[in-house]
Length: 177
Image 1 (spheres, rainbow, N blue to C red):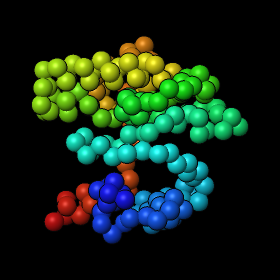
Image 2 (image 1 turned 135 degrees about the vertical axis):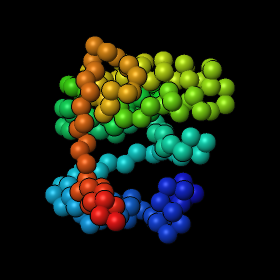
Image 3 (image 1 turned 60 degrees about the horizontal axis):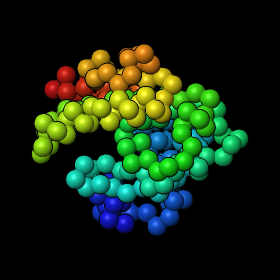
Image 4 (image 1 turned 30 degrees about the horizontal axis):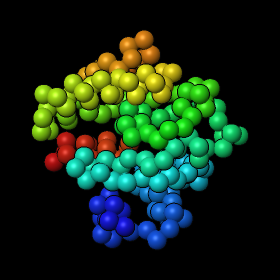
């Protein structure tokens, strides 16, 4: 419950996964204007914990074990380096899936430079992120060329997320004010 309060605020604490899923689907439909996704997205849950010092959610357990064999084909890992830092033993993503694409968009090396013991932490973070991408992805898509090298032989730079209409609407309002 404490993790939920930190992530969603005091007013959004969920009693069940079904209640949280309803919240996500409503947000997709009403805020993100993604009606089809709000109806068709398959949401699977895994146990995680919020690391307060890093403000990050980490999985607790082997996520690959939760995915049924009939759902195994292509896997897209959002932030594969982060997702696998505390990965539990089990089948690797690249063994379980035919093709794994990792989407990298956060420069954890820069974050590590701003933390205590940065002279040790930052280079270690760069190596760790590279290892995670190499070990768990067939292809790595970086959303910006400003991100470091993770696995150069596997990398491309491409904006696959796009820009939500609300972001453009806000920019238009600011421009006219």
